[in-house]
Image 1 (tube, protein in one colour):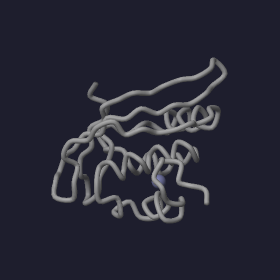
Image 2: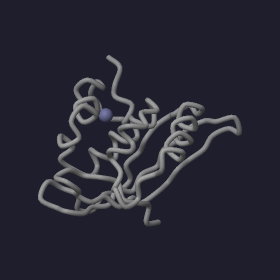
Image 3: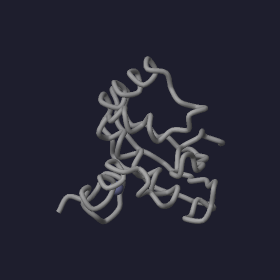
Length: 130
Ligand SMILES: [Zn+2]
């Protein structure tokens, strides 16, 4: 069994794919965060755009750059370090995570405390706050 890229002990089909097909299925900010990591893995620009708050949405050029960067690196793993709020009854939440990848320069790490909000009835990524 190949587990989902996001690190959950489930297959992609039983995990992030459900959310990639219907974003409202991400009931918590952490689930949305994990689905975004998997979307980076798959270089899925449409989903990255859909799962980002409108006020911080990247332009079409930026999305192109993000997608080609995501394709150019080898994603290693995602670790969720800490979460606050972001549960089914919340309207905002934060998820602190660490994503590891390799690029031409070697190993890279993205560590961020991300802010999530509910927009149009589903979770979206707003911005990094730390
Ligand atoms: Zn997953």
